[in-house]
Length: 442
Ligand code: PA5
Image (tube, rainbow, N blue to C red; front, top):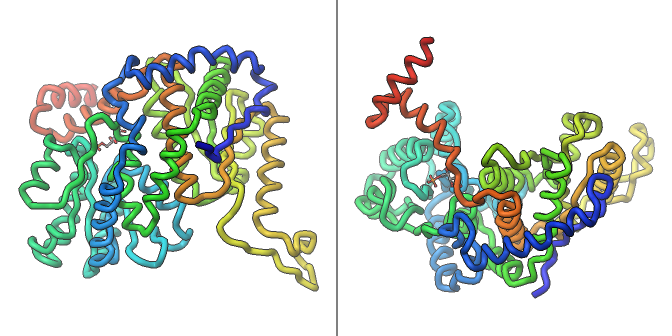
């Protein structure tokens, strides 16, 4: 099946040759085989690989029905979750929504996010916004034990119950979690919430095409059937583009490029880059190796990070997400006085200016010693986002195996939690607590 995502690596020539990329072709083929046969490390977490094509129309109908219920009863729905239980939904909703709609396609129910930080003022502001308003909650945690969403849920559940009563609140809360384990599962069963299950074999950062991402996206009014259809197209297409991207970024890494900057020229894609950062950072950053995934929003960041990228340490390359067409047309008007000297742009669409900024930037950065990979996508729609999501997931699995790491675990994220729990005297952490305190007083 044809897909519309194209990967162009011509502008990496100054740093690596075609032979450097081709040299990784056999390893990439072996990585794909490991994914398909489940013979590589982390093979218990390959549920994402054929997830899109395994989602049934009945499952999508069920998610849409729950979304319709929430849309009918709520002006705001708070999606509570962090990391993989947050970024996918945020990325898709932000990419598809009006820049000023606060996350709703059609002026309907607005999806807000919580549990993705421990900011006291953030929670205060959110609770002030929701007080007295019709709101619901989608609480998402695969483990069901993560501290940040648990705190947010306790607070928002209290607020909701105080506003509508416990029985009504239970009808406005959906929990997405493990099928049997974790505090959230037990709480949801006890309180009688509608629940969806996160499959055991799908890790958080690969879960956007499960109810974790699909339910909030549907509540925001977007077409999850088209999103999944796009992902199916990419799943069933030849994976040449994913291999090429994986091989090229690994070849660049081996050539001394340590930082990959994902670049967009489309403000709605900011959180897609945040999702990508988690996907690649958490999948590959192991054994004291891996590209550091960074991101910039251009042209905004050309006025802040542009100098560093043009002229700083030459250990970087860029991957530019190049969007073909915008959803709307805005033309720069003629002005008789031309006091701002902009009449040379009169009659042009803003996007024509943006495209020339993109091209000019790519050329300038290559001239400055920053190679780039271009990933083209025709436009930012549900279908193409679905393709892009699956493309990045597949490439990440291949790339992790090329790098020689297990792309599906995340042992390093436990470190801060152990210390935080010890410092907060969480039951079970008494020994670490004493050790931590001794360390702090040294
Ligand atoms: O990708 C991951 O596994 C993590 O980012 C998790 O999604 C994140 O830590 C949240 O975990 P949970 O869904 O268990 O609350």
